[in-house]
Image (cartoon, rainbow, N blue to C red; front, side, top):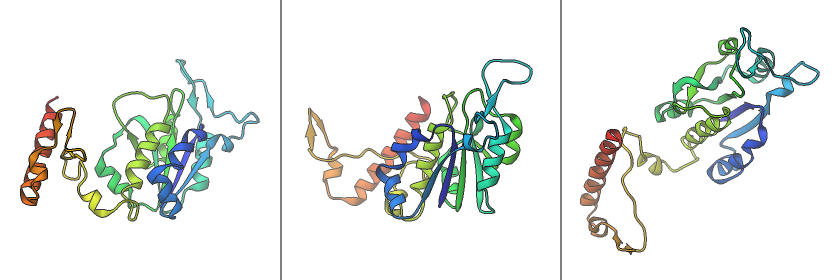
Amino acid sequence: MKIDVLTLFPSMFDGFINESIIKRAKDKGIVDINIINFRDYSLDKNKRVDDYPYGGGAGMVLMCEPIFRAIEDIRTSDSIVIMLTPSGKLFKESIAYDLSKYKHIILLCGHYEGFDERIKSIVDMELSIGDYVLTGGEVPSMVVMDAVIRLVDGVISKESLVSESFNDDNVDYPVYTKPREFRGMKVPEVLLSGNHKEIDAWREEQRISLTNSREDS
């Protein structure tokens, strides 16, 4: 899988792409991540990418020219172009699974007051990671990449993926490790029993209970 990220702040991704599971996926050649400053595609002598909104209003708006030129330069027949925006479709695990099957993902990070509306004409999908406003699309793009990359074959074991939260809309069950007791808090006896049928039943009960309490809160 190839992922191109169009952003005005490339250095924000330094730690993300060079640590932990994402780095290992890169090192194995499973995923190729390119961070592209779309300011480089500006035709303005000062590399300007934004301007005041027509009709007045606060903030600056990202211009069509550099973004169109950037997307047209890197897009292929295998690409899906995704705009990260508060007004987009809410990102969920099911969308992450769908995106994990693509060969090439282009993520467009907004900033300032938003995008010129005409930019939406060259994107395939608009995504939001929640009902709140952030300073830009960089953090949302990392969320999308993290969720998608870990689903790509070879990044994480299939056994781990099968047992994860949200595979069937339920959250995961509680897990414990040594010691058996810590500051008066004990590991549930069923987990120490060695009876895997009872353990599986307990875990499923916990998943349902935790999911219900999450929905009620």
